[in-house]
Length: 308
Length: 307
Image (tube, rainbow over all chains, first blue to last red; front, side, top):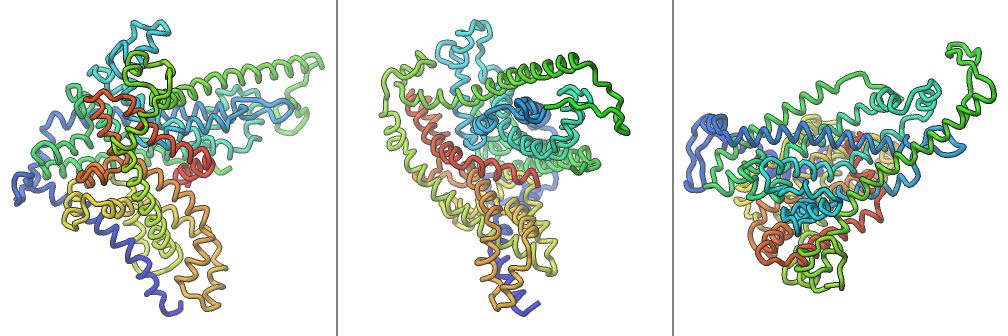
């Protein structure tokens, strides 16, 4: 190579690396250091206390409850979201039939459906959470959801939604599903439209029903995309900070029944006596859980790639 | 549509084509199955479309109602249009200021992300040098860990740098946290582009820098637009970072912070019309831009997952 190559390389990498090093890498490393100290907002100096914060976390009932909520989100939200996404994408791409053309076709107006389904994806989580908080208004006369239920004769089903300790987390999960299905419909549609129609034709000619084609043809060919989608959705479910912080009663209530680890970390660091050391340790715990989830997903989804 | 049979074709199952009548029957059944399927699919799809669309429309039409009306008749259409909700939200609730702040922050940070991300990605994709793999790996590893994890140290790093509670500080943080995905995506994108054009330019005496900006960037336009959209939406939606790093002066707040505060305030003041106007102010521009560029937006947001 000609001279000046290294000057160019260094010149081009300097700013991105500096920004990334100072604002991402260094906080990442410091988090481990801080998690080994007793640093709080009340004392300017910090003492090294080894793994004490981690011990505190392990014996903290609230931490385990919040983590359990994260795990619930991680198990339920992606399954429901991906299933609905696959179902609608299949409807859009293979659910119809056009006269005189191939025997496999999408329904009419699939473009319009995709545009509408995708709406929540372009809105801020803040907008979505506040909007649904209003919809879930517990008042039987003023809350939209309750009024709707009343007007369609399901008056017995009116609830206090986010105010009910047994329902609140499910209500938040429903909103997370509502917000993310559109993304997966578009993602899986893109995947499905790249599957050659001959494969479907052949399956139909052999007398396969559409449900069979879905499980025997579509799903195996899309397994890679589904796995990636699972990781994406898992990351969203692991976080859930904005949804819970904005929708729940009292930041994680009622009775801490909707608290999640990121929110607990936030409260520990910036509200309850600024326990920075403890919050940093929770951050490390979050990292471990996230990595375990990622490794498990990659392990489970590893199989032969099907080329088509 | 045909139901051809492959009589005698090697390897095919010997499905005898029946009498013409039975063929016709099968053909008719197939067509009716298609009709049923179409209707069946449309019902499901339409129900979900309504479930998505109605809450958004409800927020919009509630923004034109008086607060009393919103509570007493939550489902009714506005009797007459209360535009004052919008003007209140824009001025009194400061949404106008938040909107401008958000545009400033997202504008600068997206441009910065794309510029620095593409520069780093180009070098990592096209040049051999010691440490190349390591640097790439460090960037990409950033995709794996949750931002919430580093909240405490980030708060103090920005405090010590004196950039906490400032818009430039927020912009720098947004850029830094958008780099991993941008570098990851743009690196693979630059690898797919042909090398011959850039080599020809270098032979003709263009500098590396000039080659990048005049030849590679225009060639990489589809990738840059796609990830640019991804970053605009991601940064527009940020809530956690401004909440922690931009707590100071309310005049510097971004939309998501302003909305969260508005929701709490209106709970005390009972100005529900103002809250829905605020929500609509945050919703409409994004939806409008999305509808115009829906193809690019859908492609941009799903690009990463299909790589």
